[in-house]
Image (cartoon, rainbow, N blue to C red; front, side, top):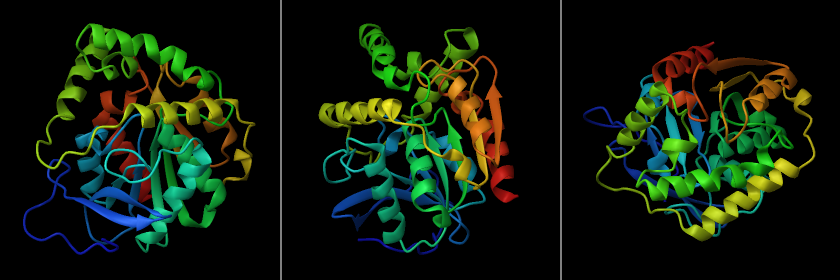
Length: 288
């Protein structure tokens, strides 16, 4: 199993053709993809409910990897990663820490989108010395407004996607305006760019187990975010219906060293709709 990062030889590796690797940690096997420079503090990317490696936005990954090492990983039981999907965010955070340690990394930056943002917060609380900087997008704190209702909010839009033969993310991640629809089509097209070595699709069992973990996070008591002095960038659309935008505002208020960016006429997937502005802001934040 791979536990180190030899420099990439030959042409520049992009997300479209980055090889899928694996490493043993916490009693199972995690699959991941790595690209970007060989040196530097890597950005660990933690993705949303139901996402496999193929759900990371290629433009965001490639944009970050232009100057920084980037590592995107599947949670336990998701895609080609082994084991059974955890029922709590705390378990996912422990797995992520074990994964990072198995790669021999001493310090990392985190980018957590939606569910990944829950996990990133828990990692900061569990291992503050491991994390240098964090980007939280489309996410919210434990016990945050409406998080326990992600399922009831999402199921009708998932059904709408099935009935209209569209990926549910078309409705879940974007507004219904002309701008939102255009951004949704472009985003979903980007997710299909990788043709070879694609990840295994998520199983319905794992999908439902992740939803239980999200509901539990929404019902969980608030965490002491005031104890986290790690620099944090909070980003979201101004009309997030899955994890209401009020949660992003709450995070930026409660985290002592945070800044907030809200994208206009954008939903849960605001960073995908404003990918160029987001990558520019993220790189500036990480480089400070």
